[in-house]
Structure formats: structure tokens, C-alpha cells
Image 1: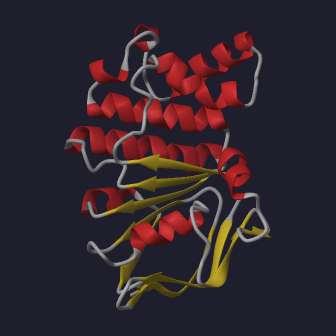
Image 2 (image 1 turned 90 degrees about the vertical axis):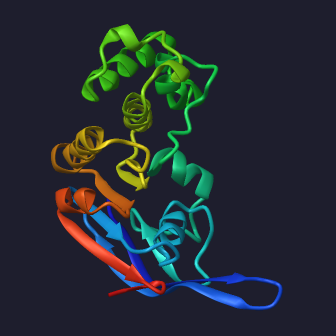
Amino acid sequence: MSISLKNVSYNYKGKYQTVRAVDGVSYDFEAGKCYAIIGKSGSGKTTLLSLMAGLDLPTEGEIIVDGKSTKDWDRNRMRREAVSVIYQNYNLFPLLTVQENIQYPLDLKKVPKKEAEALGRKVRERVDLSENYDKRMPAHLSGGEQQRVAIARTLAQGCKIILADEPTGNLDSTNTRNIVDILCTLAHDDGCTVIIVTHDPSVAEQADTVLQMKDGAWI
């Protein structure tokens, strides 16, 4: 599943001025590759990721997800079935166990309990967490462990486009490399389209392709 940007622009309208956060960006992201988008704070990279996630629509141009413009998608459905987002702060449910967090997308889809539990265990193992973690709460996990749970939840969701917004921003160098290794494996072995927004050069080094933004455009 691929995602394409066609002359995408986005304006923030303030009380006194309009800011062009993304300015005429085009690119075709291919399945099976891991991409890094780098740039200084305010360069437009996080805004662009939000547009690709369907959290808003471009002011100009269009974004094509699995052959269909985000303007034509039911964007809530798109985020359930096609595009998954991994955040810097993990976004785990604090009152749910590891297993319950991982299974949450399956519960929304009303997957039968035994099937959901089996798939939950399978994806947990893929991110190198043992069954000892199943009943733990997020507050009892390290940052690296929480991010693994977030990735496992993405795997359970089954989306083939994975967007990661500074996924290693709160992690040390060892956990950073491990998390990016997992994301690259999802691209190379599972055929996912993985796009990572990052300010960390070590993350960009692991990606197949690095794209740099400045003032809302590629450089």
C-alpha cells in the first residue's frame, strides 16, 4: 500500500496572518521502504505527517492513500484500515494492561476474544516482549517497552502505512536503534510503507531514504 503527495500545501490561518506550513510538496512513497523526514522545528514535517494521517485536508493539492484521495476517504475509516500513527508519547491507555492495549484495535473491530488474544500474543512476540509483560500496566514499563507496545498495537491493527512522529524522541540510543530496527523490518519483511519524522540523525541513518524539509518544502 503506497501513499503519494501531489503538490500538497497547507495554510494555518491566524488572527493576523496566514502561515504556509507546507508549500507545494510532492513525493511517491513506496511500499517496502522505510523513509525518514528530517528538518528543524517549524520546518513543516509534523504538519505534513498529520495531513498524511488524514487529521486534516491539504489547503491545496491532494494526498493519495491506496489509490484514493484523502478527500474521498472516510478519514476515520482510513486510520482504522490503512494508516496507523505511532507517537513520541506512546499514547497507551494507562488503565489497560499491555495485552489489553495491544488488542484494543481488535476489540473495536469485534474480533472474537480467542482470536484477538492469539493475534495479540503473536504481535507482542514480534516486538521482543515476553508473555511476562501481558498483565503489566504502562506505568510499570520503560519508555522503550512502552514504544514496543505501541508498535505491537499498530501491528494488531493491520495497517500497511505506518507513520511515526518522533517515535524515539524520549528514548536512549540503544532503545532508539532497536525501535527503528523494528520499524525498518516492518517495511522490508512485511511490505509496509514506513515514514518516520525525526530530528535524530542516527534514526535517519537507518532509513532507506531521507527527505529534508525547510520552510514547508523539500530541500
